[in-house]
Length: 209
Image (cartoon, rainbow, N blue to C red; front, top):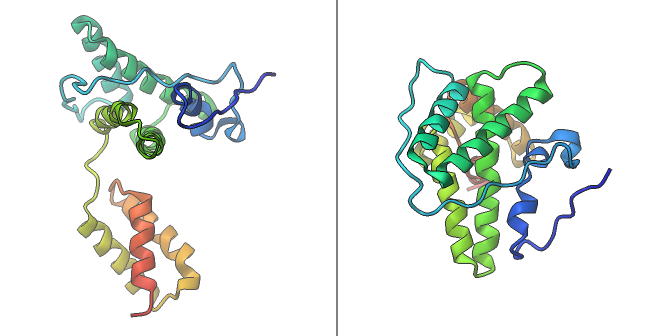
């Protein structure tokens, strides 16, 4: 079966190729077949629409569906397109799991989409394509409205230090274990953290003073 060809990250077509949801979500070992690939949504304008007010009595999937209906009624095409993309990503994961997703699993899918877009922002910025970077950033803002507030640097530092204290006196050779324990701690606490920030914090704490 024909595979998608990933091109130059600074080409106009890169946005549609690299942001295929199937490889981003780990389906088929990161290789998307035509039947599973879902194109990246058309970038949003900077004014992505109203901020989502999350209803805790609804599941995340239900909330997104409700907002899709609202976007349709408002004829907000950029927002509608983005929300449909998010819904499709959740459906792909649901098919892979072969059962409905709980909110924690849904949030993991959205976190993957955000990470993917952050990488695109970095690539476009390096290539001097600020307009494209801004459009990707706008999608990040929209998706983040469905996730818990990201942990602050101070929260991450406190969590990492707590894990290191619990482990005794881990060395740099045990950085992987410290990272794993720290991420598990944040997950159990329902905290959304930036893995790169955690890694940098762990490295800093383990580096001999």
